[in-house]
Length: 120
Image (cartoon, rainbow, N blue to C red; front, side, top):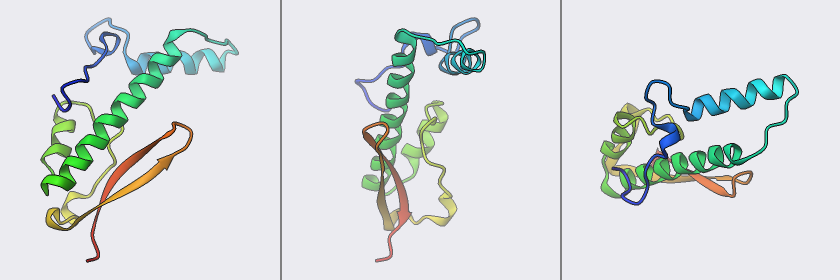
C-alpha cells in the first residue's frame, strides 16, 4: 500500500470481465463520438479515480524528495498505480539534490508534483 487510507474501487479491479477505468473512459469516448450524452455516477467515478491516481503520484514524488530515494517512484510502477506519475529520467537525477516542482492543475483544482535536480 502506498497510502493506507486509499484503496482501488472494485470497478477497477482489472480482472477478466470487470469494468475498468480505461473501459469506462473508452465507453464515454465512443458515446461522445456517436453523439450520445452520458450522465450518471460513472463520470464522477472517473474523476474520483483520476484524483486517486494523482494523490498516489504526489505522495510517491514527495516521499522520494523527503527520503532522497527513488524507491517510492519505483513502487507505484510495480503496483501499477502510475497513471498520473510524471515520467522521470532517474539516471539524470541526483537523489541527494532533489527539488520538488509543483504544477497547478486549475481544471482539477489540484496540483501535480515532479522532481528535478536542485541547482544548489
